[in-house]
Image 1 (cartoon, rainbow, N blue to C red):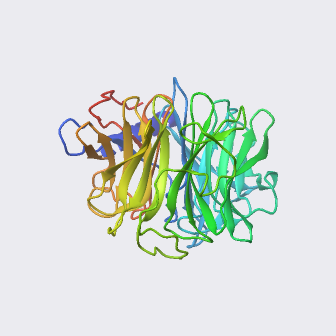
Image 2 (cartoon, rainbow, N blue to C red):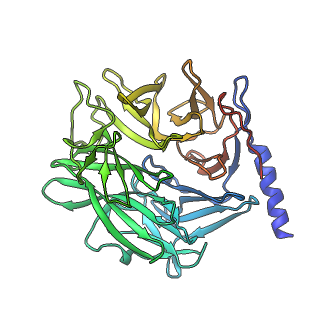
Image 3 (cartoon, rainbow, N blue to C red):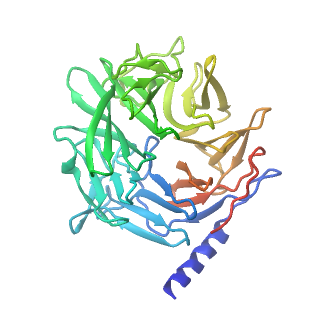
Length: 436
């Protein structure tokens, strides 16, 4: 009876929150408010806070910062939505005590993945800190602190994590271990069969530069596609020379998009540069945005041939705001397109592949409608509103194994987190969504 009542409540919330964007041919984006309180610190651009699982069924796992014991602190949890639409909360625990950390916007946010055995892995609240790593000891269980299982002596930032086709996990972090003037990108692997973490390799490093991890994506062959940015050492909110790298776990070979092998760690002289420097673009160490051209936030998916499709924000020469751009790779190299540049956007972006076209997700900095999806219909990019009337500030998107874009939408103004199922028609892929 309790589950029936909760299912009815979820259905009512879904119906109340269903929104219909303007524009002929657009269906509704189905949203649900996650029924747990969210902390104001739950906002980032680099994170991977959303994971989906299941073929004949569908689960969503949304890692987020929850309110702490006092203002300025937060706890961390997973909001789990099962195939019947029932929500449950899995708090990160230090034994019998909820894990709690200081707020730090843009840094102390969680990333989550589910391994092949059904255990949750969460990396949380690290800004040049020792490891804050939590894992469920049983399938689907409450995550407990397992930080001591990762290499001691490292201070890390920006953990992005993904699940390999065989159930292993791969983790990319920035490691602050070189006082000579490098903050390097280091790749780790969770061996699911042996339940152990190992360090694969330092994948990117350059003197007087810091690496900013963006994304990890596996293809059907089991190869890992890696995306990252560079900033002047030690840090800057404005980054440059967005870079791509491919890694084969079976051969240990790293390569560029054209298949040319490279030696890891790559540097700025050997990396596969997606977005080159503009004539006036320059590396500047700054605690605030120094202005000028540069990159800020990027995510990646793969097309039907396993080639990278990258969405990113880039401020062009002469502009005061970041345009939304797409990069694809073909015979002539990297092809860069402007998706949206009519108004300022926030440091939030994502991309999925429908089987015929990409969907670029981004957030505008102002207006009644903030969260949008853009699709190239052949004659240009057409945008659709995802959540009219909701002041979304950050987002993440994951295409579920069932082929549905699952949305993670953050409303900091009202301290609400939304789960969504993208039911918008992209004019090339007219498959309808459904409410489970």
